[in-house]
Length: 273
Image (cartoon, rainbow, N blue to C red; front, side):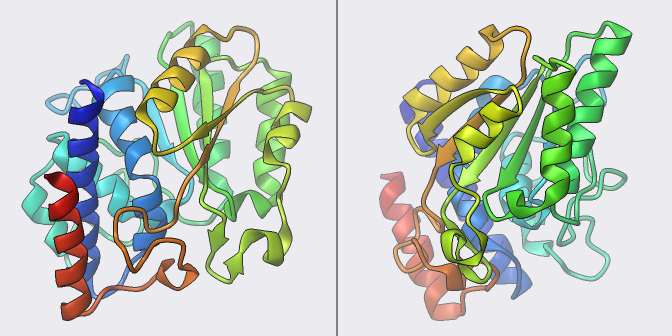
């Protein structure tokens, strides 16, 4: 896909996020929207996957460590053809397979269930080690929140990944600067994020997480990096694409009302043009 196609696809992913959260009357739009361009690049360009055969043995693995941004994950999977886009409207409804956190037993394309923050990266590290031990050449990707990396388990996993030289692992940090309680710097600053990963023997790349040229270059560089895992620190805007949600911590975990939904969809319709 060229950049224009990727932008259009990411815009459709954003529409799905807003629609899902609106219909659920709950959920996490802010961090889903900030990661939409990363999700889009991963699923439409980077990952070796097949929606018709979600369990194929040699597929690349993706673990959503910041599991509450499931609306972004689900919208991407739906737009990629793993299940109907229409099903996004059932988010968090009783009996729906699309619950508030991803369930690998219920959802096609989901490689690992996620919930408690900090745990996803450990699962991804285990998958990457497994590939090395069994001589498989699939790659493993995991997406973390910048608030999530305040969890100690993240750094235990990073220490292990660096020590074991897991060059088939890519850790992406969605650095939108905000968490549920406000600015990450005020709550418990994780900065400098890049230097921390470097200290754990990661190859680190800093990018604008909304620039597809930079996203593409980073993932290509990660593929070429041997002997160490890669961390991509993506600077993003929380709520990206929806005027009144951008850079507002209040939209971490809140659904738009009828009027806000109309404004959000109008914003995205306009962007789509």
